[in-house]
Length: 388
Ligand code: SF4
Ligand code: SF4
Image (cartoon, rainbow, N blue to C red):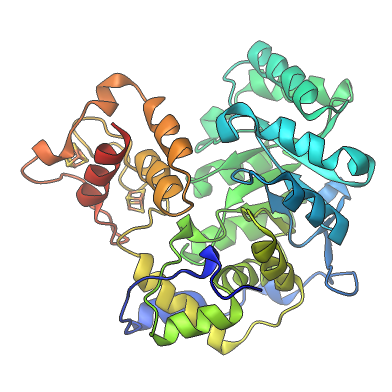
């Protein structure tokens, strides 16, 4: 592995670790975690069963969202990674096509998931047809409704589309993805008998999120984790203890290990852009969790606290000008955390004009209060400066 990997370019933070942060990263395992399902596999690969689907997935999957080098995806498949997540909207509409081309030779032995952002049955089914053409396949293994944050967004109409896709053999299993609102949308997904849920899940989240994830898994829903790196803010100042630690072990490795500590998460889809990251992330399936890892994540949590929006929804509706705070902060993290400026800006500009034209700098004080310590107005001003 290269020591100068971008994954390891860390900035800032003289970090005293508050007890609450350490507790968050070191909290005891839940009963479900203790009753751990056995992983199977040998060498660097470990497999878990994706809920009631029966699919044996590698604990580390592959999030293709920001991968531009097709050979990295091919290499991951060669190494035995078998779960790949895409969506057409990624990379200016080209991601599905690139993923399909990369995995063509191994299609039958791999699992591919994609998504639709459509809001009605007809549009969703049309979207699926396009996805199949783009990927170059007759079926996808998991077809998600994209970015749902409340049970009310899992409409009967869309569920009918998913069932029809299953009947026609175009989607083996169905589910939805969620960035926030877990406490509402995940139990709703369980009640509606979703096969798989792709949820933002990382070390910054409160224990109640782990609880709903555990309950969904217990009900037989396959659980896939995304946003495992908590926004990608990995920059810690060289010369600090945290920098040395992360350089030695790899920043993503520690965050991934935290997620895989929970046996109720069956696979993860970290964004991977180069061979160095792939090599580092592969170790998460077998590397043991240590007390030192807990300390590293606690320090990292303090570093990203003012920057990273957990999309908890607690500030929804509190901006009098209607700014969708969590969405804008997520787009900012695409640009600053993952280095995906274009994706961040394009996502921002899809918001209504009455939202994109707001300037937070014009407010004397911000009405939004974040209980998690995000400097909301400052971050929104940054997004508005970057994207408009
Ligand atoms: S800004 Fe804070 S309160 Fe609002 S969604 Fe993000 S983490 Fe939650
Ligand atoms: S500063 Fe706060 S209250 Fe003002 S527009 Fe921005 S988010 Fe809304």
